Length: 362
Image (cartoon, rainbow, N blue to C red; front, side):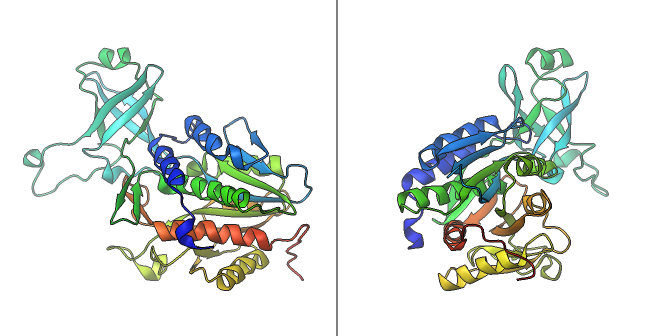
């Protein structure tokens, strides 16, 4: 299968609409609806849970269950305090980066709809020149153009409203996808494309396949924890993003040597089951799919950890997509890496046998 043939125009149209849609942690429902609508032709049924994780299922009656998973939520802010002058102070919802906030435009999500605002910042002329104060959670603020707290409340904005950035999808130099929330709605996109390829290539799997788009990963893998108990899978292949370490100010001795355009990243960690990982490595080598390796120490920091340690232990592996500028509004990935992650998951599924144990001792 040629990587050039993987992404169709319809795939890219879905990707753009899916990335542009806001799905902050705890408020993923609209994005999940888009995702399920795209996935619907390629699965037999859906599972959803109380907090919004969505699962497309192929062969739902099969006793052996394999999960492929990404997460649906994006980082955001909460309104934490409203001043008498109508300015808003915030707290994080996930790992939001305070240093990129000043001068960014924002959308505040209210029952009355989107309210637009900006993160304000003192002009360079007015800041202390001998000791400039850096941006931090305690001093970044949002300006809605209001003059009083009452005007803010009249717009429907209150403490607890969630705040996202409106930055939208673009393509740089023909093959770099750029947007906020590529971490990790790109994962949801890639697993949906795997389902599409299975359907279009008339592949019949000897097990039940659960295409899982989990919620609340950004605040502690919570959606994966919940859905793992619901599905009780035998195998889980998770996809998320990792750092491209070739940009300035990153220490490769600490973060590893990884670069976008050089292929999917296969993780080495205690949560990664050795035999499943080697099946994926063997698949990549057999199918001539370029890949990189990454040691993640005690924890992967992804939903892999939640699946691996659930239900008495689930054979789990992690295939990551190299990404630049994580948790900013200009997250960047290489189109070829996206295609190769899709192909690697697809080809690996075709090598998993029904009732395969991945026993540690065999």
